Image (cartoon, rainbow, N blue to C red; front, side):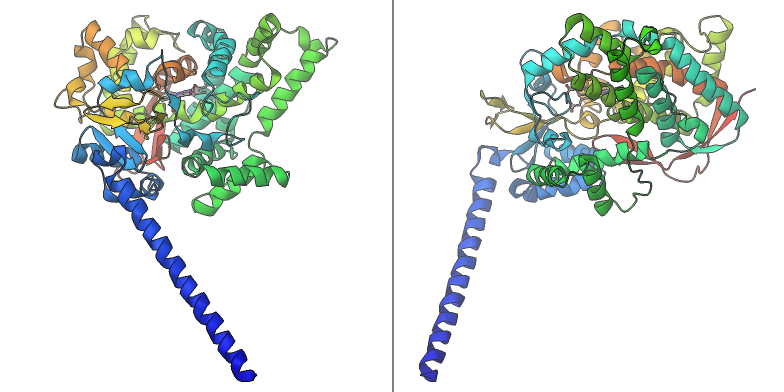
Length: 530
Ligand code: HEM
């Protein structure tokens, strides 16, 4: 009896071992078949690129996680040419002719799957406003038309007085603190966040006054780190979102915890970084609904007031859209504009151009062509060298360092003799496009602001139509006018009133790329020019 029991157990063990081995072999065969298929049999198989990239998206995830994607992509194009396969279903393109097809206004391709990582619902709910990740083009058109009037260049003129007020306070503080060393990127973020808080809600945030980030800027930077990873793992993102909903936790808190898990440099972690904005929004909605409130009669010209006015006139805008749009000013508007300004200042100082810039600003002020603070259009019109430096800085160090990925439409796409079937993820990286020798000549890799002064108006139009610094087509940046209104005032002030130097000139500048690319821990000293 005992003997037969033993035999039975042995048999069961052998059978389960055998079935375990069979399963392993089956899995190995399936994996091999998958590798052979994706590498050698899919329509994308002929497109050159690293071997690993053709069989798993983990390769591109690892490149992205290196925070150096902007440079990696330049090297990839140098090595493989104008088309590079960077994941089993993703291709990077640098052929300028493809730009109109991929980003053209008329038949915009949908944004790629990667963008879902930025959605609070891992896909956008019908009543949500999320320009960054939504793919319902009809809804986006309606929403952009609805909020658009609050973001035109003309509308920005309403905020001049506010900007003069905030920047005036900042200059006063900077004069008092003359000689201080600051992390230039964080400083510009604080400077701009204070402006955006006033322009959006007429609320003073006073980060420059406090002399440090209260965590809100850190939260914006963390957000990008989460998004670049979540974008590649939409299912994981969905689980995080659902679990946070189930646990009734703020989704934001969940992602901040996830970020802290991976990003060892994370330090400041405020509980509610955007509480000030949420309070401002609720306060304004409450004020609108209470006609007896003295405040409701005050005519306000901030962006929130403009959006509320548009709502009362046309009725299309919902409260939810208004709240999201004003929050977008912070999520999408602060580090972008700050990154642009800090990289410019750094370039000017590192390349020994500050004196020439001072001379240009001083002369324009003397001749009455540049007000202090500057008025709209004055920088462009009367500071040609500084404007050329800005263009060159945005050309060589554009804000976005990853391809702006789109999904090939039903018609498929023929490019350079390759066929990209519907659903292929395809994108162009501004860091690559902006170094194209057919556009910028043999010295495209070099810093030479003069190239912008030598252009004929026709050439200039061509260059401006062939860059993705503010995106392209229907999905181009809706905040461009707001950004320009801020930086065209801020740049001449910071460079005209102050001397800047490097606190650690021996240290190579380090640019950290997530979706955006920004200078990290670059300490600079400002001194008032007296
Ligand atoms: C110098 C400053 C800025 C730069 C360089 C910049 C750049 C860009 C770029 C390249 C895109 C396209 C992204 C893509 O296709 O994936 C974009 C989109 C966007 N930007 Fe900006 N941006 C700036 C400032 C702002 C500001 C101030 C706002 C505030 C409203 C803003 C809001 C947005 C939004 C909501 C989108 C998504 C639009 C859509 O897909 O429909 N940006 N921006």
